[in-house]
Image (cartoon, rainbow, N blue to C red):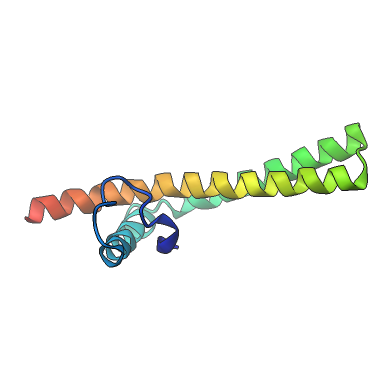
Length: 108
């Protein structure tokens, strides 16, 4: 999971990839184990899947699009959902990153 966020956060962008992966691993542990934000991540994922299903139902039920158009809309919604999930997970990871960086500065 951490490799998706290499060079994602400005605070650690200047560090090597190896250092970033180590810091991100600590941040993930901090966010999802210590701060228990894993529940939020599960809620985000559930809401994204539910909104995807609702949107697809509305498109199919009310617009009666052609099969090809329906497939295009479905692919577009899936790509957007994945991007939104990465963004929202990144926000949760950032909370852990702030704590890890603050502790690192306090220890120095």
